[in-house]
Image (cartoon, rainbow, N blue to C red; front, side, top):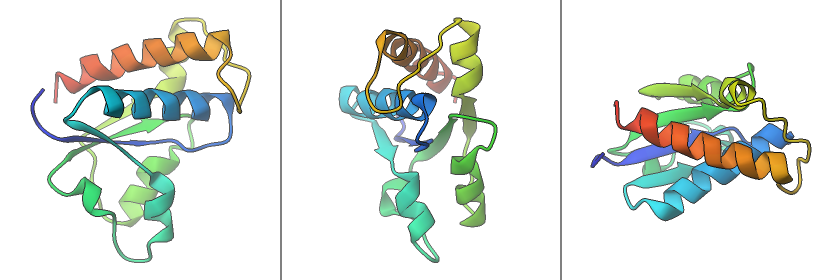
Length: 125
């Protein structure tokens, strides 16, 4: 994976929202070609998106079925190359994070699982 990847993730105030934010930010800190993008910033901008998305393959990481990150990007006419549904990944590993403010043990495990899954998916884009 050598292309610039922008992970645009859920910013929901649920335990899974925290897991998604932690996983995407950690991946950005650990990989120089990955950036974590703030969906709230794009939502607040009336007609454009941040330059952080320029020249990047955009991957959305959703926390729930509302898929707010994709909806907001679609409203801005920005396409993503992939959408990763974190809730199904966490459920597949029978994890149930319960704290929306701090990562509990299940949340930490979910972050590790999600990061590994995201990296494997990025290899295929």
